[in-house]
Length: 184
Image 1 (tube, helix red, strand yellow):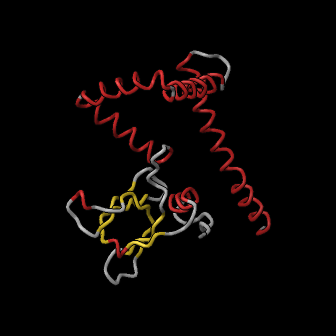
Image 2: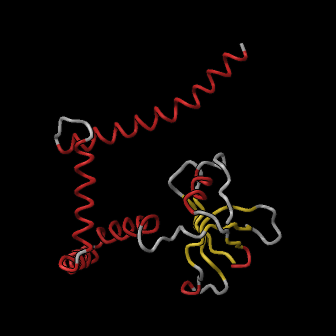
């Protein structure tokens, strides 16, 4: 009986992640296809990816760069839109843009002499612009959530880690159940 239960649990571990991934991708495909009114599942998603890539290519062109800048300046003048647009742009750029902010993994000692430590990312090497000398800004993501905590603390309590930031983020978000990120 134990052996059958073991097989069942192993089957769950192999099946559930695949099923959840397929279910989420299918849901995304269906939703995008529904917005575009396309009957073939996945065509809308592929069309959207192609359109976003084309917009990126146009936005990188010297000919259209001034138009993009003018459009962004217009959005920056609208009170609520400015908050929404700049916040979205900044968080997206922090993960995948040219100015990645989650690229420096760090180990943070919470209190002086404390044995409690948290994992995060150094996002600002200096907090002087905030009027706080000899301090840094560290973002600590929450496990199993798209949220986190920003900490401002003395740089002496932060140890930078030489590891791949994507593996490090996966380790934190998984609550530590994925493999430890390799230190370089």
